[in-house]
Image (cartoon, rainbow, N blue to C red):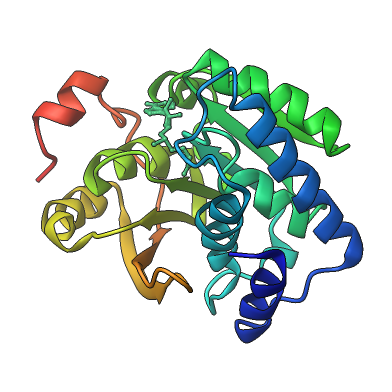
Length: 237
Ligand code: SAM
């Protein structure tokens, strides 16, 4: 979508960007597309696609009545890739201490350059697997978030143990319907509950998006997450 359409569509969901934010989104798109010519970070290779499928899509997290981001202090984006949605959230709410975690060194190297280009402060970039990182960072973040990382029950077991009691894990998914039954059982074992599922549609191409809000209610047993192979092979019930 064009930048004008981006601005117009965001207004419809009550998001108004400042000139400074718009300039930063432009710098982000330009830097990503240039870097992507030599290092494969995203399958989206045109600027209109970046505005629609990365920026607008990530900004949908602000169209909610569950989390007030102005009150969030710490957030971790698990499997952030080229910074979605973590960097987009940081551009909108610079006060948040954002941790960007990805196991792929190519992605975290790009992110280190990106934070310099965008002059972002209080961003921590971690090249690690979530199941390893959680060992030293149990229930430490107000919000954990993941877009397009893996099946809901798998990503719940990786992300909820990073989330504070009374904090939220937010999963951004395309279709979730086939995954919800097994995920609900796992989420229950992790002393957490799905409190809301918000269905949204991207403008222009009209594909569906679901944003799933999972609240952690109590301390999670130290045995979770299990080893990755176990998480994948054996669903928690
Ligand atoms: N969230 C980004 C987005 O929406 O554009 C990237 C999505 S990409 C499909 C999935 C990312 O998750 C990859 O960059 C991959 O390296 C990372 N990833 C997958 N499993 C992970 C794990 N267990 N720990 C850390 N990163 C992981």
